Amino acid sequence: MPVWYSGFGKPSQSSFKQCLADIQPLIIYLNGIFSYRFVIIPLLVTNKKKIKVVVCPRGMLQRGALAGKAMKKKIFLSALKISGLVKHVTWHATNEEEKDDIQRVFGKNSNVTIAKNIPKKPIASVQSPVKFAGRLRLVYLSLIAEKKNLKQIIELVAKATGNITLDIYGPVKDENYWKSCEQEINGSAGKIIYVGEVRPELVQETFAKYDASIILTKGENFGHALYESLSAGRPLITSHFTPWNSLEEKKAGWNLDISNDDSSLEKLQAIAGMDVDIFSQYCEGAYQLAMEYYRDASDIEGYKKMFDIEG
View 1 (cartoon, one colour):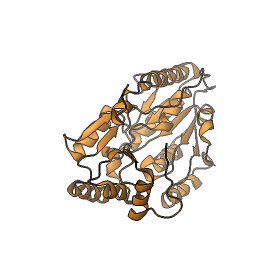
View 2 (cartoon, one colour):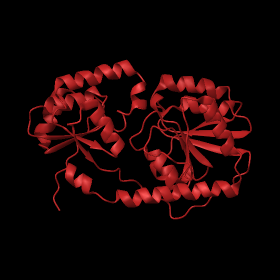
View 3 (spheres, rainbow, N blue to C red):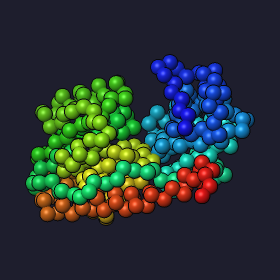
View 4 (tube, rainbow, N blue to C red):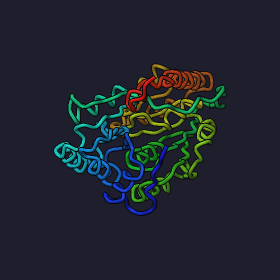
């Protein structure tokens, strides 16, 4: 399968045209939506050509995700619709909710194929952490960017009473946002530390070192880090802007109302108060939820349909 790397320079229409001439693809897959270089330029170059284009928004069209830099995104999407560049694309949604998001923004007649993310296999068996009532060791493991809402997590942990700590892992993608996070970390009296990045093969192992993970994201169509926490048998604390909802009912974690700091803080402190017997039930529930998803995601019929593969 031919692969094109754009290198360190900025990809242009001419370089992308040369790529098409060299590779002559039947299908082009675009990951994301809010990018001039990696979405608009390919759409401009392939417009009216007999090349199938598949676009996956990756949760960027969720209401929560659209709330950040709302006016800029509204103008971008309006211009994209008016241009007609996405009139004939195939949209890749990873679940029904994302299909609804795509059709809400681009119209009910949008051609959407649902194909679930194919995730990493859950660990072989779950070993629950030694959880003491009154203590909660949290881990944030994700990109550091405004959409992931790390600053709110830091503020909640800093305000919490009792023995609640937070270790942060992940690459910094937004330096200005990270600086505002660092200011809050510096005032947390050592409860919060930044550890660094984690190699992909060590993600599940890293989650397993803590009691629970917390990612109060403003929007995810899947959330690989969220799934990998569950797949390591660690309950997930997240927002309502992901496919991983009703977590408490499933004893797999908790969905917080990120618009309400008081209720979120109250829930964190209630989780910290759990003893090992109760908490172990949530670890097992997290693992079972990941196993269910992994079994269902093995069905690749959606991908065959999307990429026009027979058999």
